[in-house]
Length: 480
Length: 99
Image 1 (cartoon, rainbow over the protein chains, first blue to last red):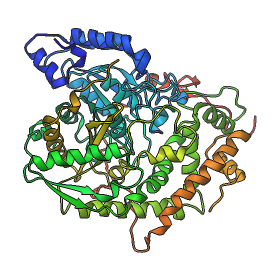
Image 2 (image 1 turned 45 degrees about the horizontal axis):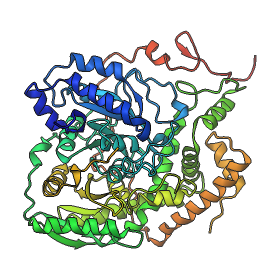
Image 3 (image 1 turned 45 degrees about the vertical axis):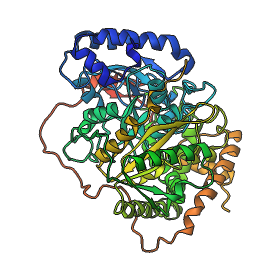
Image 4 (image 1 turned 90 degrees about the vertical axis):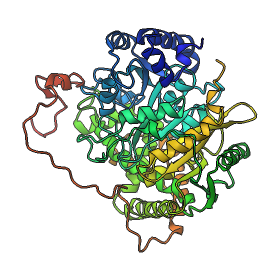
């Protein structure tokens, strides 16, 4: 029989319902797996075995995620457990409250096994800016897992957890899911409460699932989605049973393929992976249309004004007063702020704070921030027009498969450009998933992105599930 | 092309409450220059008649809640994380001039 840690949540649920296994046995296996391989992958930064064991011991078979281990990205607050955003400035921070998604997971019977590595404050596309050191890609340990939710994606791919939560501001769930060969969904802006998510860019951030298959993503989204009075951007719409949208049938579904995503810079093997996927959809009876999203090439520029500007404002709260690091030698309060922040933030965090502060500073606000917000309107308009013609849009998730560790560290602009395919969904607030759709000649996963209209996650699940059930890319696991 | 010189970086760093050494000033000056010159691409687009997007939700409005007494986080739990405290308060270096 397959090891319990290698199974999906829905398969484990069957075993649990038939009393063929117990939450404690699943957890035992998962922690054994972490102890065996995490020294290679380095995805789990703050495991919490004792809390998990006591949860598993007392779990009652009622919730949708009863007995299922979940790994949490380290920027989501779990009451009483270290939550650090992989930054020195938050070392030893133990939140006095649970994020709303954590409350929902606990109510659903899930077992929280610890925290996943990430780029510091989610600033990065490679998981190399973490204060704990980089996470590795389980398919090739010399390569990055993607970021910023690199620990979450890598751990799911390496079978160190059954499910994981990530957060996505410019692709931070989808890009690592793609590079690690797993499923990652960024829900519609407003679908999932961000209460307790340590803010990066408030007009873009969303929490979402990273899982081994589409069905698990649908189940996990169903658990974490929904209105929350603690987040004023959380939308009060009913949460459907997303698993009901999982049909193998995409007959008549209109799928748009935007030409702007197949230009120079896209790796030829990534392109052929997506072209093959398009053929699968045609064979299944979907109608494939060529569409255009003319402002695509401006998305990265827009994002790298809007996101750092909002980040520089959000990160002003890390001043050494209420929590985290403080420089204790300071003479006065300004000196304390400066010394604390200079010591506590890493290079990429400083770079984004500087960039954002510059774009918001007097005399530059109109030229940068306001201009970017206007171009953002154009990018949204592109999608509004496209969705008059089609139900879903298919693109590559990333322009290339996983790159080598260290390859882009000293060139921030080339790192930023690796998010070119994922950023538009955040700017437009749309839901988007990445699912495995192939492998490169050297065995690295290739991901396909599927986008849909706001709050039309069901269309995404339908398209993603149909593809998955007719292919077997999602069944491959890295040899570790 | 717009040059973000080291003095500009120093000024922005002060606004951001960050202190940078000579090496960092140099590195950030050249990196910010190259990032901002890439971003200049946006000026190719005519946005004269375009409204800015501050958020994507069509129905976002200010949310008020009823003014009902309910428990806050326990003070002791919140102060648990304080780098320095005095009784029920966060303690910081002197803010107001004088003795």
